[in-house]
Amino acid sequence: MATQRPSIPKGTRDFPPQEMMRRNHIFRTIEGVFVRYGYQPLETPAMENLSTLLGKYGEEGDRLLFRILNSGDFLRGIDREELLSMDARQLSLKIAEKGLRYDLTVPFARFVVQHRNEITFPFKRYQIQPVWRADRPQKGRYREFYQCDVDVIGSSSLLNEAELTMIIDEVFTRLDVPVTIRLNNRKVLAGIAEVIGAGEKMREMTVAIDKLAKIGKEGVVAELQERGLDGESIDELLPVLEYEGSESEKLRFLHNLLDASETGRRGLEEMRQLLDHLRQSGLRQEVVFDLTLARGLDYYTGTIFEVTAKEWEIGSICGGGRYDDLTGIFGMSGVSGVGVSFGADRIYDVMLNTGKFSEETARTTTVLFIHFGAGEISHVLPLAAALRRAGIATEVYPDPAKLKKQMNYANQKGIPYVVLMGEDEIASGKVSLRNMQSGEQISLPAGELAEYLKKILAKE
RNA sequence: GUGGAUGUAGCUCAGUUGGUUAGAGCACUGGAUUGUGGUUCCAGGUGUCGUGGGUUCGAGUCCCAUCUUCCACCCCA
Image (cartoon, rainbow, N blue to C red; front, side, top):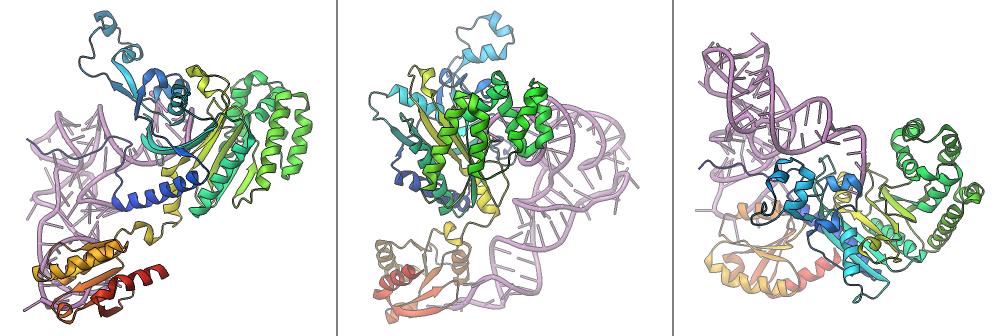
């Protein structure tokens, strides 16, 4: 048999050790912040029933769902006529009943409805798992990627929005990634659509103005025309797009503009309150009320969030919003929720490209024991055990290889300390401890090694 | 889903109008140095030229298909 060339499916990746350690650093930081705000962990299966997934992400989303072929004789019960119809969409529903999850929000909604009697509301959960999309891959766009979601469901208080903003602020502060947190409110957007006489075209309007940063004012105008907004409405919208002023001036400007729209006034009041909460929370990252922030997902109904890195352009690295009736499709209405999702893969890219990973992030072992043969092993093992008991990650080189080879191993793996155990050391009851970074080497009694290392490691 | 680029050693890339046995640097392995790494010097294998067809006396080079990666749409993390 010919040897086959190893490969993985399009848009998927292996995560080698160094990358894993860096990714884990991101995941642990994010998770640590979630926990500190009282969110609880949840995991759901990689695959869901296709009926749970279909129709939740629009036509585009349905196309991007990975479908899982039924097991066994998947053609059973399908008549010849159907098979020959060549209608892939219809046929796929018969031969595939499961699909890979497309995001974590819909499975979460499914979970909440399914377990509504066991859940205490407001329910605060976080979920860090991969999702799959049959998208065409590009840089920073994969077919398998991780999402870190935090949501609170069963409370419509704006304090939740404020808390999520604080979480975003803290995560990126801890990761040392300066960001801009952009906020807006779908009700404000709806109000704007209403007062410019395009209430019916709210969705078209938001999709177009969402692209402002990318295609500019002229581009947006062209897009608006293309999407069927009349010239009058566009003329009225322009001052909104062009508006520049302080936050308080912006609120006043909108207050006048949205006077005639009840929805708009409500949205504006929500924004005013949220910004007020945030002022009292001592945020360290930049927060802006951005009228041109729209976000595509249809189910958002209130506050919307989007976060971009200041030092590296890669699109949004975190986003979310309030959805008033996500669980309605599963038969549980009137439950409001709000949540955000962190894009770990993109955060990784930002941190890598802006040099935010320190050497320590990729370090696993602190001490390596170097020895030269079977005779030394009996002296090495108790010492290594003592270090591990002291909480120091310790390795013993498995082969009595040349010193150079063992040193090189420590070097390659970024191990900062090496303990040499040879005939001389054993004879004197001492060990040689070498700092691989400075090249400094000291000799000390074997019994004092653990204490000494603990002391100098604590100082680092 | 639409349109466009790309692929040569583990990595970054050379490779002439199609011509005989496909190259460099880095990395890797061994040695100089039987107990002191990162520097240096020497030696060494780096390979179905992405894959499958086709044109040709002859294809890494030209043509077609396919896959990969990347880019612009679409959408999004």
